[in-house]
Amino acid sequence: MDINTFAEYDLIGYGSGIYFGKHHKSLLGLVDKLPKSQTKEAFIFYTSGVRKVKFLHECNKLLKKKLLDKGFDIIGEFSCRGFDTVGPFKLIGGINKGRPDEKDLKQAEIFARGLRDKS
Image (cartoon, rainbow, N blue to C red; front, side, top):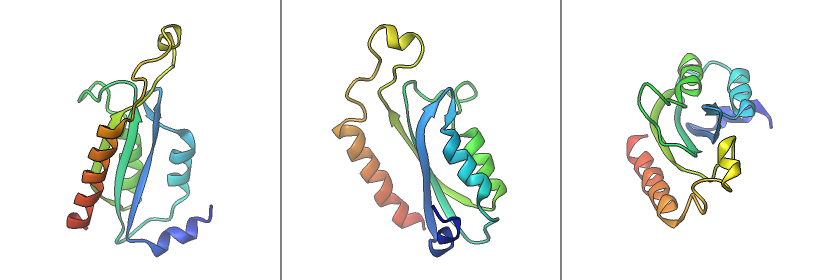
């Protein structure tokens, strides 16, 4: 991926599944390589086996900080549950089987349409 192509876009989405409480290391590494932005908007999205709990499970914290440090204006965040087989969940065959599902995808569509109004 050529980092310079990011300059062509006004709004960029950054997301992945959540791994041990944060976005995938390849996404975090990509953001580290980005040049400082002056007028770029961003949104964050992710799937996670566990529900986001303020002050306890804020998996966007590191990605959000990196994007803000690069000068991005974060205009939205979207998350939904995802299939998870990490650690003890593997013993029971995982949690959130079938997620994201049709309802999650509909919510993601509504979120994405709302981004148009914000940007």
